[in-house]
Length: 614
Image 1 (cartoon, rainbow, N blue to C red):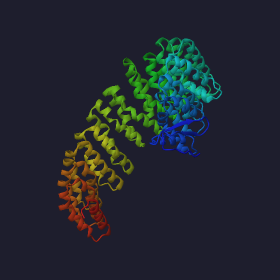
Image 2: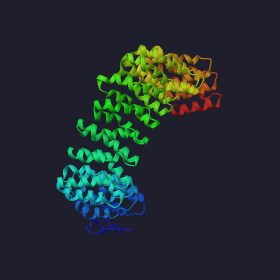
Image 3: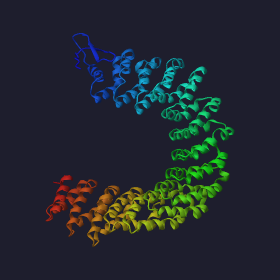
């Protein structure tokens, strides 16, 4: 399609199911082409190129502004409604744009004009497009007056709810809750009936959509209808033949339980919840485990003691690892929410035995989930119980073969530190950490190095210097390069944590002392450490303490050390002042640039070039 645009004031007419037509009328000798780009955007709405159509849709608000509110309502929106047959990404962008179109069609008074294109989008096959259309419909529903809601919006919901295709019926499920509170009692009754119909729809996808919105719909209903309608729907959906429907009913259970009086929970909700906790499908049991803390808060302390504690034990012992992991993840939260008067007894008698079994679980995800929360039990159980019952479990997990388990334990050491104190902690857990740090397998040592900054932050500078500093320095001379490299990075993180003054007094002297080591690999490690520490330590420490050592090492007999001196000078150069670069660094680099070794020459020349010392 070719369209000619004159450099004049322009009007645009959009013809249904046809190309964009541009009618040009001369406005005088001094024509204005400011609207030419808008004409191009409109033209691109029907272009064969998907990317051009997508770009134009994303700029739909610009087109609407140019057309004005009346022509947007009468021409642009009908045109868009009639062209809802496009690539999914174009439709997705359109659905999103229309949600922000209220002011572009003339404000809340005319917002109902946006309903036809969004209704069409809410029935398409692609799920993400439908979801975005429903999101936009929900958004603009709040901008309808109560009258417009009944005249325009509610009929749309009914049409979707009784549509022939499941796509429209699934979309309807997300719209009931936004219009229900603002319509008359007669219309409310009709809405409830439509929702009941969708909950028993023949298509599983529709029942799934209804189950996912059950809790949301229950929140806007009057209590009498929650008891008479919602409970029966909840029970039916929780017994559905499809596990994908049943698991969504569990999610709704939380909302429903919070709405009901305590005395009704036992009879109306608990039988269904008990059934879900023992469901034959692991996915349903997983959902119960995942929502357990929320369910616990919703049903209250008495039902928790009588019903949820045994159910939680069963979930922790479930035959499926995914369920055990989800339950393990909730251990701390569940224990925190137990009634105070019986909390310790319930934990020690019912929960801790299950936890002990999970520490040696065959599945690493279960152990990792437990390790991320188990340390939190120490604050609940107190010092004596922690020392007697929990510390052995922490030790076992600290020695676990799975790195994630070890990391989760080390990450949460501060919880235990607050309860039992640093001395007790050092006597029990730190020996295990030191043992791992000296493990024969280098990968185990590497894992501990990576945790060290975290551990240092939790234990504090004094304790770190006393117990772990020597360990960090020993890693710098490890026989495995990966360990030496990780130890260098570790020092940088420690300096960032403890500060430059600590580095000057504690780390720098030991690092510089390695410059005289007989092993050239250790001397090179000195240079690597200086590279890493210079920026963190700052100009003064680098110039005063580190630079002289680097310059001295330029005379090393090993060429590998000399070319690393050139690389180090290039690295620390930006930290040094210009006078120092000219008087101290430049002569050494020029000497190295004349070295007999080709690699030394190359890196020296590169450093001179980068530092602009030529």
